[in-house]
Length: 188
Image (cartoon, rainbow, N blue to C red):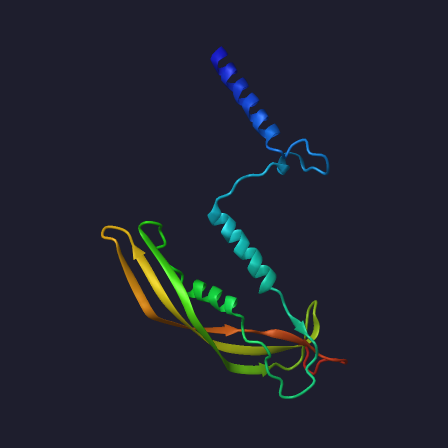
């Protein structure tokens, strides 16, 4: 019984010393109590969180541009290269990436972007936005790359695909405000 009490007491003492020496407790300023002590996470989960934040900040926001003044209106910007590469990674992930067993790398050699369709929907009213027109821009993106697979077991060797080509279709849709008055078609 005394051995259990001694073990529990020493564990509590060691835990309190570690918490007090972490530099996160006893600092002047606003505090959130026990929630202010950092909890370590693995690099895999950290990368997922960073990718989610990056995509939310860069690509998952609705763009509302000024009204269209001249006809025909064409899309100004093709999709950026990093968006094309991220979509390529989602469509064709690098499989078998296990260090020392099998590792796959992709060297991008070039990206071509071709406008396939560009049209504007008639005006309508969207909730929380108001009267807008949806501008559709569809791009055909072709990615040229070299894919290298290092196999480490059972016999170490390397597989090269120097002529890798992948075609992606990316939609770059955005909204245009309708200048003044009511839209010609009601919301559905």
